[in-house]
Length: 471
Image (tube, rainbow, N blue to C red; front, side, top):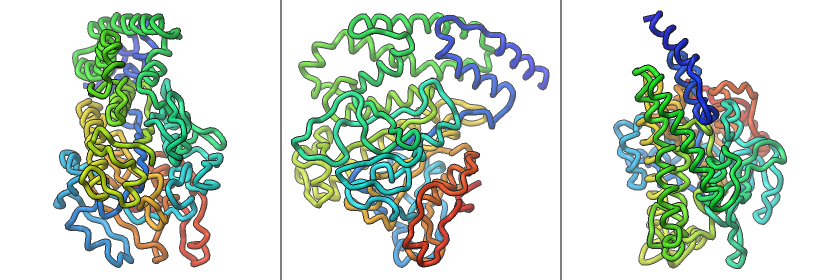
């Protein structure tokens, strides 16, 4: 067996590629790692899904565990296996062994209110609700993915609109800066609000293409050149790697098919985009969001990126595609119903759609073999809000939903975890949570983010990781 593995390593190392070499190189590196039996060499993937209007703790707590939230003055942990997930999380039931519900971490060092901007993932305060200010450090999402370099680095995708803005403000298209993610101090991560432009930037830039029809022709040429290398790989790669290769190439083939469809239906799409679903050019937010998730899955599977942050919505967004046409997210957060549904029913409807998209992404990653498991085993998907536990978050608590195997580095998957309430002995902050995650992935940082001075005055320790979260 040892000599066979050695032969596989030598064979894979000797494969040469043509025009598609840059795009297919991540696959060959991964196949080489598998042939070497080096599980630790597999890249880890990080997906952060950031919603607005708060993530209510009770809404993501199994009903059988709601009583554990009352007067919680101690650390509580249990497996989720024997507890039915709330209705809005039901799409994750097939992944329950890799679902983690994390509650009780506070974030009072951040800006409370409608949004905490960079603070949600950078653990510091922004100037005001009308200004995101400058990020003080790389946020948790980009800091994690920077440990696993990829051709496109960390990718930001978003729906159009501002985190906080008046109805009269223009709705930006293309590249936007929502103020939630940063690559370094003072260096904000750009987000792409247009699925079509996101595709162009992620897959068209590989050819140095121009605009318009010329750009499309060059992109098609890139995919054609890639097909030549695909055919060569299918002939040369050992049979044991064929299954992995086919999964790897699915993202390219799906994008090529979608691109062809868009070209043939461009005029029709422009005339009647709201009537068309699952298209990059639709004006419906749910279609754009679904397109972003398709792009995210393709980029992760192809190895073009190991880190993606998706801005799920914003306060001015109207979920017309979910039948909530009468009120935007802001109004719903303040208690207004929409189209015959109460505020809570509207929030459940929106969350259910988000979780359905999350489950779809998890399913695609679980279908891709990797070593002795799947890509989902080496992925951490985090669903959270930029305003903590409520529409107007006071940040005594900041709930998180974690999906994926986390590379076996964290003891979160498959568990419900709650920290002691704010001000109680043993209470910890999101800075402690992020420090735990970073340390688990090999980042030796002593503590991530700013302290909560009120907790410091009470003599409550908040420096360093929470070791019980680390495997």
